[in-house]
Length: 296
Image (cartoon, rainbow, N blue to C red; front, side):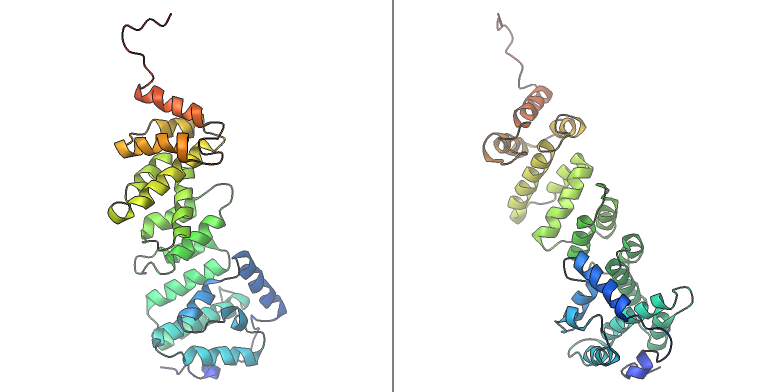
């Protein structure tokens, strides 16, 4: 087994290097597109290296040596965790040397005994950092992986959705079924659900009960607002919403949100609010006049 704590063992001394000015510029462009944080920054932070944007990408051999030293000397971190970061860096080398010919990352994994799940995770995160989301999910949805970085993965996938196609974040969600920890990730996921299937979004809100009752109500109101404030409020999405089998409390929330609580285009002052309420009344039969009433 090779000792990758030695810099010369970990990194090749010959051939093209990934951190020339063009390579650095490309990585910094990706970081900017991802609101200033790459997944490798998060991994480095987990190792106690809190200045990821300053140390990655390394701009000189000296800075690469310094990063290598910080990685291998990270206190309280498993050997596998440290090797996984070296694996990520060697994926950069493989990319610049032709992915079909260079196997530096795989060689490190084989020589060091890096477990397969670490390789799968880091390769998935590497693809995420390179805006290659479909390839990323081929790895990050693997059943051997814990739902690590799930909030960040959901957030990035939803924010970088194009043409209202939320198939990738929803595929990740349905496959991994992670427990989301941040309100931002939860609301972004729910927004994707609501835009894709009003019915599925309603049943998703019902997974929150007990101590999460307030969350359920908040998400339900988000659902109503997203439909009522959309161009399709009186079309298929609106019809789907008003035809759903609301529970008693949901019926109350629906009425209150569109008559008292809701704000903006999706709330009580929105141009479609009264029409959607009327649509619901028609579906539930609440607008029927009592038998025997003379309308004339």
